[in-house]
Length: 134
Image (tube, rainbow, N blue to C red; front, side, top):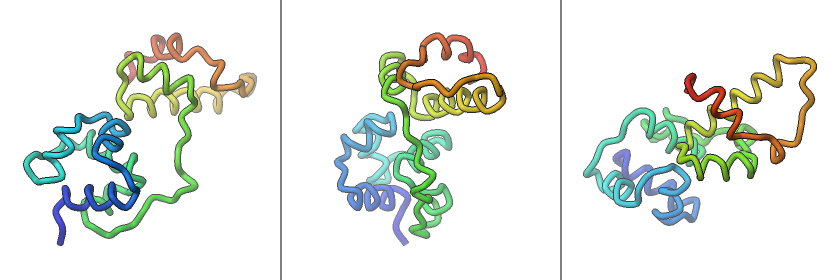
């Protein structure tokens, strides 16, 4: 049975990604990812969750080597304007997803809120209003 690091490396290679690619997508340093893949470091639950999402794997499959991938229909598309804001603000992948999810929940609960173009939305102002809840 492969180690956690071995499973991460295998999935990364299956996706055709370099360590740099995965590190950027998951908000990790390349050195940390290299150490993780080689079994020299552990990983926190939060970072493991982010890594699993980026790799489109469930936590169970990543931890237990079941090879089960996430349902591709559940992939999340992050609006370009939010991605730019998150990069400038230094938000992690997890924080970015939480901001997007909060926005979607607010829209879903307000029947009068129009579904506006997410690329024209003021993500910085929204983030500042919800930051304390992250």
